[in-house]
Amino acid sequence: MEVFIFTFIILIVVVAAMAIGYMVQRKTIAGSCGGLGALGIEKACDCDTPCEKRKERMKKEQEWQQNKII
Image 1 (cartoon, rainbow, N blue to C red):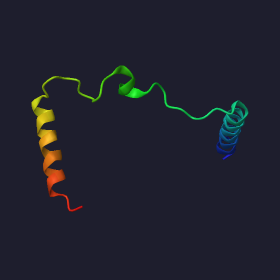
Image 2: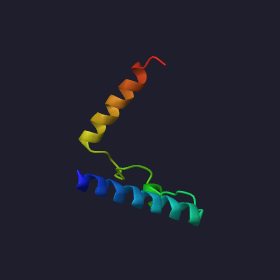
Image 3: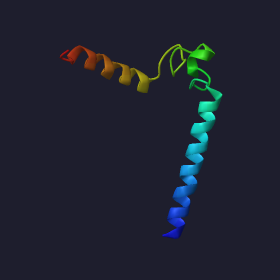
């Protein structure tokens, strides 16, 4: 039980230190690098022609869009 309490206290101290550091820096939280958009890639698969698996997924998505109620 002592190990659990000691570990919990260490965790709380680390989280508190991170929170204080964040407040001192006064920076906004930002993303890492902008994702695929920063590389000029508009989609996850940057192929000219999609593969069969992608075509099936696109067909299912299109059918779902046509069949949805709202």
